[in-house]
Image (cartoon, rainbow, N blue to C red):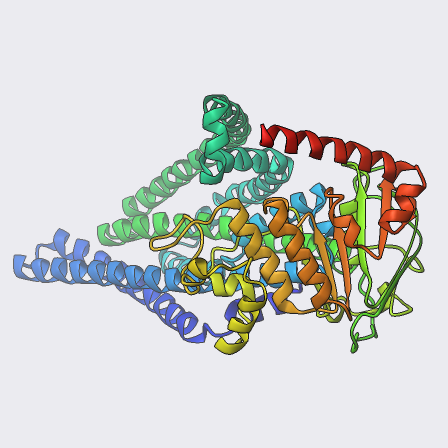
Length: 587
């Protein structure tokens, strides 16, 4: 994003606020000018003893000017806070839109992407103050010009002394920005780790296991170690900053001493009055403060350049990497899926998760994928759903390469429920419909069709927020949450339904009836089910058996049993476990 685009983002819809700040910034130098003149006049009258009443009037005028300056600064701070809140929304919204441009989870789930996004988010939050700093810099520049002019009216040498002693501050501010940027980048992983541990320590959903495993104290100590390490890193940077800062700050008093000696010399030659002496000294301190502040603000503008580089790198590495022009819009239901010699590995891994995968699915089929843990079933399901980036000529939807499609149009025809389904802090209706406008009759027909998912007693809380974080919300059991997630996938009614262990927390009898109903309802669509429950495999038109990232068998349930292969051994083990469980229950 270029500077022009940044300015448009930060200024759009905020013109009145910015105009108000600019107006107040313009008034402050006028007050400063008046204070300078009146201070000089006050001390001049004090030395000539022109009467107490005039001095009282001048003192009151100086007080009023001071009150006015304080009030204007307060108003400026108030408007700047309002503006900062609007900018915070704009930047967070921009980040959300940036995240939404990543149409697959391949990069989103990678540690490198998470780290880079963490750094980008922190820098963007700081750069959100760009307009505020710009106005502050403008204010300081105007103040510098006013005070420099006022001082130079009486002594050019004094004005240049102030400028000369401010140069070290400029060098210091530039180096400080560099140090801070380097520190934030180098400690990003430590910062993420610390935040992750602290979140786990206080997350209500973790407390049951933390209590039962007596792990809360150990987790707190581990978080404490990470936090101390992060603080130690910050302390080292702070130590350097403080040491350098003290050295820079001592230059200011030295400059003030030089000015005082210069002014005393001018007084001794009767070329300067006491009032001018006091006014110039006060103005010199204000000028030095404005110069130092301007140097710090100017140095921080380097963050915009760094942020721009980070943003371009993030877009190049994660957002634009696999986006192509002139992509095709999927305008018909998904009726055919074919995978040819698919190989896949995650960006941060050197090992292939999937190898030599061949698979073909047609409309009306109920497909089941089985296999041991870690065999690649879930990864394959995500690839079929278009959630992972793959090479060209490996995955085909409706006889066309998946990479030729606009992924958003593809997702319109895909519903999915995963093992790690989401629990949205929304109402039950929003959790199911995903905020799609739906009339009550349509919703009731859906509930009647899948009554095992949404019992009448739960349906009564349709407009109630789910979860345990907010007042007047209701918490559901694990099984109830899973039923909500299944209902969400079914309600979308897509032509491709992908389910990855969707009923692991539902009792077996209800599970089988639900799958039979889904198979009947999706008779003219495609269903892909990943499961460890081999009883459900009996419903499949085809069962794909996976092992170590490869498909080792394919066929219907009875054909695979007769093959005496991997599936048969899995079935025998499953049946044995099921029989033992039934015997134990009968006893």
